[in-house]
Image (cartoon, rainbow, N blue to C red; front, side, top):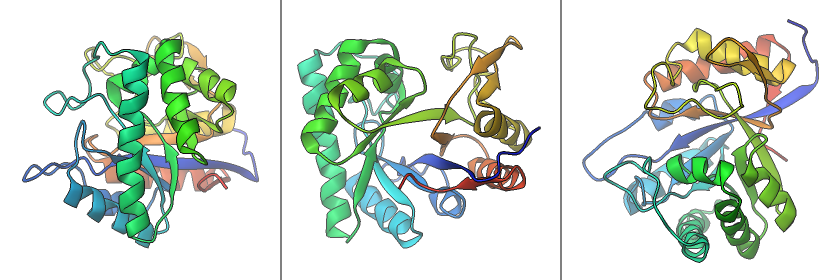
Length: 256
């Protein structure tokens, strides 16, 4: 595989997804390897104490902090689509961004980006009305980047709204031939092997493409790569990805 000396990419993770007595993921271990963190806002996971502890830990490690808004779906971990008007989606996203920004500011940290979670992310990837509502919320809040699936309606909406767009690829999720993520309801939707995730990360960062579940090639031009904090062995995956990117000559850094 050809190295791209001087190439740079962000490595992000979804974190702060514990809730009350229910613990999920090893965020502290992930912060050793990632450069950006998407903090759950309390709608699919996270509670105020968890949000504050997560933000403080990320800031201490120099990890860029982002809001990870969701549909209001604690029972379904935000992975169930909901029928909401664009106006309600916009207000809901704005509300969640505000919660994360307030806690970040109180801890001397800055909020840098917004990345929708789960079903909201997937709906915004293909539904332009939902994508526009999210982009409008980010634009109204001001001075934040919007992270969305590379090539999706959310990236188009961000650009149309004048919001800096961050195109996202995935280390630990399988792709369909059309560039969408393989639904979690189907077999082999999640890459749990650190080696497989590292191989996909390097392919996207270096060659701008991934191998779809059916073996075909999918173009993926990404500025950031995601590792899900709830994926089994997420910290091991993050370590393998970071080391593989280093060997490929790709610098890992948050967007400037």
